[in-house]
Length: 116
Length: 113
Image 1 (cartoon, rainbow over the protein chains, first blue to last red):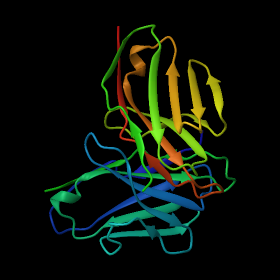
Image 2: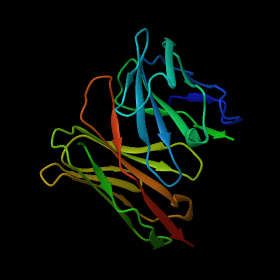
Image 3: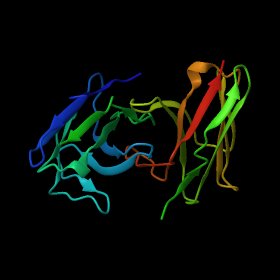
């Protein structure tokens, strides 16, 4: 199956700093990537839909100025958590659909963010 | 508001038994239905997807869809301890390349040796 890679897998930062998470589709091109957040024992909550070359579409309640998303190429999307606070500590997961539209959604390994 | 409901469990079955996982959804416009498996601390991995009413089988897994009842299920035959995980039901109302999924909270399955 197709591979989506996220980096870093774990990050610990101080409150007030910014953290960037990368999501790469390694063996396919993706026009659309999705960013999810998952709190412990909770389901995945869609944060935003990222389209290559255009602005991301954010879900209701997600602050676009706090969670900056850039989709600069067909294989890379980045999520930057700006001025992180402890309540931003979560498991962030990206996913991507191939440009060929195979009907499948491939997930990255996830990035666990801990804000001290 | 689109909702996907799952029994959170835990569902406990003995090794070799059939595990039955259920999911209901609120949006009648839903077109695509997915089952993901998620191990603790890991990201979800796709088990099966189903678009049409009826059954779809893949190895030990069978997905069942009933759009009239807005119900989708996953059966796991000959359950193995390695099947122990949280199973997430996901639903999409979009076609094309914009697969925006709504996830249920997941059902924790434990298969006892």
